[in-house]
Amino acid sequence: MGRPKPLVKLGHKTILQHVLANLRASRVDEIVVVLGHGAQAVAPSLKGTGCKIIVNPDYARGMSSSIRRGLSAVHPRAQAVLIALGDQPYIPAQVIDRLLSEYSRGDYQIVVPTYGGRRGHPVIIGRRYWPELRALKGDVGGRDILRGHAGDVLEVEVSVPGVLADIDRPGDVREVIFGEEDPGHDAGDP
Image (cartoon, rainbow, N blue to C red; front, side):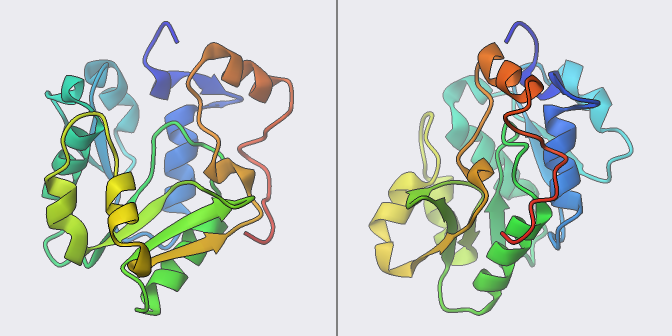
């Protein structure tokens, strides 16, 4: 991207500001932001957000190292963690709240949104599976945990394609600028 991705502008906000605004508008109790590459440039933009900021000096070891850092900073009485990606600004609070509601029913320890039958983010993982999250190695997320515990995974179909959309290339941002996505839109029913 030529600069830290979280600081890339989408309209009047950065990618990360959109993600955090959606999380803050939801019923999430605590937000822990794990920064890796470019942390020194990104951290000042988080002042006053009320988020707990954690720097992962081992970010080059992959996503699993950031997951471990984030878990170590979560409130000790937390019963679940919602893993949201910092490059997915199109997930409105309504979707997050729907996932939280489904998790709170207590039937499943893992809740994942789907769109068009494809799994997306954010993913909620109950405390029971945190040891497995901590054991992850390399540039992997919790996909193997979901596969290994298929009977404890609730897939929640949502009408928001943003659960699948992330921003990885400058072209992804151009698509946004030309109106194919609008992170500030009212998503309606998740």
